[in-house]
Picture 1: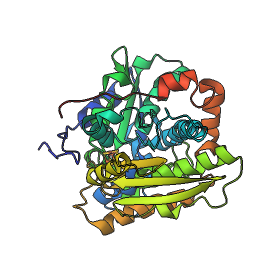
Picture 2 (picture 1 turned 120 degrees about the horizontal axis):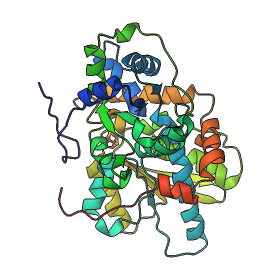
Picture 3 (picture 1 turned 45 degrees about the horizontal axis):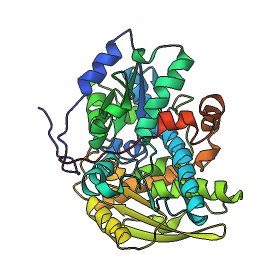
Length: 386
Ligand code: SF4
């Protein structure tokens, strides 16, 4: 029967899109590509006979290829891209702030979680110019796929179908926002959740646990260690700090692990030295904690950058994941999968991703360029009702 689950943001009712995916895959006139969010690989196995806490990144790529996707890509690529844009925006604002510009808005707030974006559009309409204008990784992926990648394939954007696998119910709403379409053609066509992918794999009789480990395809499948940690609370800001530090100081970061922003505390505060400056970082997961942190900002407490994720533990605890029922031990196991994936990567800073470097060289120019602004940045709206 139809599965109905309530979104953690309280705003959405789950709608399944498995058949839309099957139809697209069966359509010979379409090129169908898929992107998978970081958190999916940390939990998908739980619904498919693999022990919790096991990374299934390689099996997931193999399963998606068996399902018939033409190219198996990774939202992690777009997470690296998000860091390039958001990190540059942060440094730009910080530089102006340090130079005495009082118009510039700090702290910068992360904008990759649509549950959180919708929350501040409703609850903090006086602060709409404070969040980063960077689109979420899901939407950056779609925008690059339907321009740069469609061009590489030599096909019009209408021929390309972009499917996302997300840990998240709010992502279904996000991709439908009109500002993320071009002439009625959305950058991301279909979003299914981790649970829906597990169902699809089962219905297609794929023996998931028995699959070999396979890699993502190039170019939109390559990522650094900074990308998988987008799936956990503190991970986006840690990834941003790695890149912002090196871009700001021109020095190599000696220790890429920022332990102070990790962990399951509802609100975290950390001080990080970048050159001569000490940055104050805030991290909140869960919207109650986010509200508390924003009220502290309103009351005058200094922060330079704040990361918010709406779900417990971040996306690993998202509403589209295999049910976790608030089991903190299970959430910690999923978290460990992503930190292990980060630690195991040869490159761990987004600006070192060779395919991101190539994307800028061949297409975007540089972070915050005119084309980057057009494709990778957005704006926010005051909303009255849920
Ligand atoms: Fe979606 Fe939750 Fe992740 Fe936000 S924290 S992007 S609502 S899964």
